[in-house]
Length: 64
Image 1 (cartoon, rainbow, N blue to C red):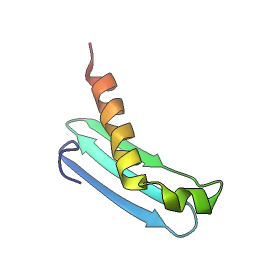
Image 2 (image 1 turned 45 degrees about the vertical axis):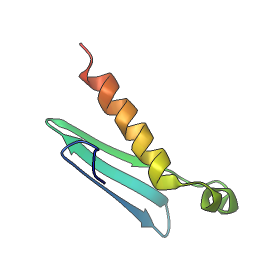
Image 3 (image 1 turned 90 degrees about the horizontal axis):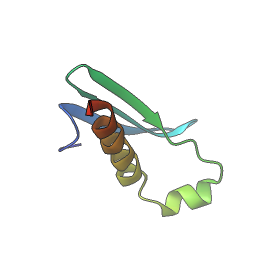
């Protein structure tokens, strides 16, 4: 996933749903979106949602 830290990847586990793994410098992040209703999850761009979450977390953690 370009533009998200030094490296990021997204994948979908058939049991637990969409995941995103990312790192930047010494920050490592793993985010999972556990679907309560798979019909709703299918209508959402989960990769974009996970990437936005990761960007916000990295931004927050980098603040002094």
